Each structure stands twice: as structure tokens, then as C-alpha cells.
Amino acid sequence: MNAKEILNRIWRSAVAKNYSHMTATQIAAMAISVCVYPYVIRRLGVEAYGLYVFGLSITSYFLEFTAFGLKFPSVKATVELRDDTEGTNRTVMCVYIIKGLLALLSCAVFCALTACIPLLRTNALLFGCIFTQILGEVLMPNWFYQGRQKMQIITYMSVGFRLLTVPFIFIFVKSPADVVTFAVINTAGIVAAAIGAMVIMVRSEGVRPVRVRADDVTSMVKDALPFFGSNVMSTVKTETVTLLIGSFLGMKDVAIYDLANKMVTIPRTITQSINQALFPAVLADQSRKVKKIIRYEYAIGFTIIALLAAGGYWAALLLGGREMVGAYPISLILSVTILTWLVVGAYIAFVFVPQRRYYLVTRNQLVALLSFLAIGIPAVAVFRNVYALTAAFALSGVCEIIYCIYITRKQRLL
Image (tube, rainbow, N blue to C red; front, side, top):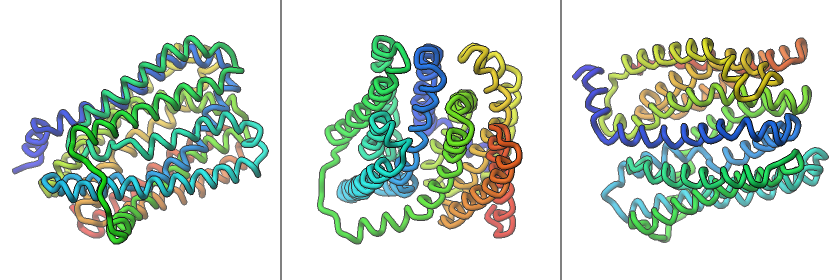
């Protein structure tokens, strides 16, 4: 069976539905955010909105720490234990125990940082409201529904509660002084969606609390560690850009960078979900014929970059007004990450993980982080502008692709 036949068979299966719901969830969330954005940026103002984005970047570190790289191991376990109710219950409990303990540790660290750092202490209420999103990370069983290929539950919960927040934003957000209110509304929607999905999992999927052994927890932690290291390095690289911009260039530049990132995130979200949705089926099939899939993903990535170059200026003008058109050239630089997320994600999901080369996932992100620091620190020291940092971020993604190609050929993984 050739690669095209494999793709066709997968696409006709439940994966197509899984992919459509995974993509719909993320695109709908981004679409709602983009629709609300022109109102929010004009009501809150560039500085207050930039401060909100800065707080999100800080929280992202804790969200990634709490997630702990559990996605791939937990999805894998859910797929393999589909017909084993007791095993599935142990997996669910292990995930919640690990995330719960890490969330408590994150809370302690966040409180300590808030007490020590003036910027966090001055904006403690705002950043605290944003930090509460960690509850959503702990409770949301998206990994469970991905393994069961029932991502429509996550779609209904996430999109439904996100839509419910929109009227509250238009009613209560009127000026820069309402930035805390804006944070509370967004956080409430995220946490409510997670609670709803968890309740449905318990009531409809037969999931029940069970006693788990310490060995079960430590085994899952061991499987997740390579992904944790990889995800932490990816988050450090991604969010450090925002933190450096806010610390050295100002919150206005943070807001402009955020708009550019939004313009890139929508098409990037569409592409990255392809690999996530295909992962369970390819894992079950144990197919190694993925070369053509990766080639198709190169073509998709370059096509989307060209479309963004053609229409990005008008998108920036429409969303943020003339004050924010500086987001367009930044979005062109960031568009390289569309290709990076797509191609590197394919190597991870279809090459490294099925062959249990988890350490390569970590090494790949280490290459990305080190290349970003090696390029970014001198660039910001010399040029001291957002374009230098963005270019360093994009080039680090190119280094990821080069590493994946090199190591795959060297170890003959394809």
C-alpha cells in the first residue's frame, strides 16, 4: 500500500471527524478572538492590552509545566486501552494526580514571584486572574477525547463557553480600567469549558475514580519527561520573545507583536491539527510510509505563507487600525513558523514517537532553544527592535527542520 492509499484510508476513517473537530475548536476560538479584537484593542488601548498579553506569557510557563508533556503518552495509553475500562480509569487518575500536584507547585512559585517582582506585584490582581487559567489545563480532558477520537465534545464545550463570554466583553469592557474584568471573563470561559468536558467524561464514558499505584504515576511521568523537556524549551523560546519585548521595548510593541502572532496562528492552527488528528490512526497502523505526507505538508506550508504575504497588510489594518499596521512585516517573518510547526510536528508524530525515539523530540527543541538564544541575544543587543527578535525566533524554527532531516537520515528512520 502506497502513501496515497494510506492517506485516503485514514481520511475516510474517524480521523477525518477527529481532525475536523480539533481544527474547528481551535479555529473557532481564534475566530471569536479575532472578531472581538477590534473592539477590545480600541476599548482597552494598546498599553493595557499589551499588559494583558504580557500576563498571558507569564502564565504560559506555568501552563506548560502543569501539562508536563502528558499529551502524547496519555493519548497513546487511551488508544491502547480502549477496551480496558480499568486501565483507562487508571490512566485518567494518573493524569489528574500529576497535573493537580504540578498546579499546586505552580501556584506556590507564582505567589513567590509576585511577592518579589515589582511588575507582578503592581499588577497582582490582573496577573492572578490570568494565572487561574491553570485550572482549565488541569481539568480539561482533551487528551482523553483525542484518544477516543471524540473531539466533538471538546469542540462543543470550548466553543460554546467561549461564545458565552462575548456578550459579557461587550457589556463590561469599556476602558483601560476594565482590563482585569476582561481577564476574568476569558478565564471563566476556559475553566467552565474544562469542567463541562470533565463532567461529560465521567457521566458518558464510564470513567470512574480508582486507586492507582505509585508505579503507575511514576511510569507515566517517565514516559512524559522527554515531551516535557521538549515542550518547556518550546514554551521558553516562544514566550521569552514576548517577555523580552515587554521588558525592553514596551507594552505597545507587545500588542503589535501579539496581533502579528494572531495573524499567523490561525493558519498555523489549521496545519498543526493535521498531525495531531492523524497520530492515533498512524500509531495504530504502525506505518512508516510518511515521506509523501511530509512532502504534502511542505507544499501546504509554503502556500499559506504566500497567501499571508498577499493579504496580511489588509488584515492588520482591518483588525488594529493604522496604529497596528506594523504587525504586517512581523507576521511575514513569523509565517516561517507555519512551516516549522507542520513539518517538525510530522517528524515527531510519525517518525520519532512511533519508534519510541522520545529523546529526539527533546533534542530537537534544545536545538531550537539554543539557536534562538545564540541568534536572538546578539540581535536584540545590536538592533534593539522587535524585528530582530522575531527573525531570531523564525530562524530557530528553520534549525528545527534541518535537525529533523539530518537525524532522520543519519539514523535511517525513514
